[in-house]
Length: 120
Image 1 (tube, rainbow, N blue to C red):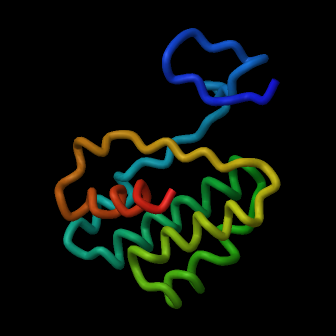
Image 2 (cartoon, rainbow, N blue to C red):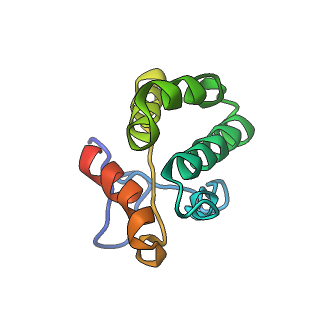
């Protein structure tokens, strides 16, 4: 039986994909909030934080090696999409991105989160 994400009831790791709450890492939108009126700086902060976490938590240097080139090539909002797309293509395992606290983002910061939701 193929595994799937269960969002409607008890979790059975034999049947459902599961994220160990003790092994996940937190990438908060707060990295972008410090530059609330500068989307390019906010994206640079977010991608830099993502790169550090990917390296530290997953021992995966791909994001660190590629995010700055993608930011320069695709510019702010499209860079995040390009980095996530490239990382997914590079990685043999599925990439699961859980976005928390979208409701606490101001309108101009939540544009980034809406962009991710539209693409992925």
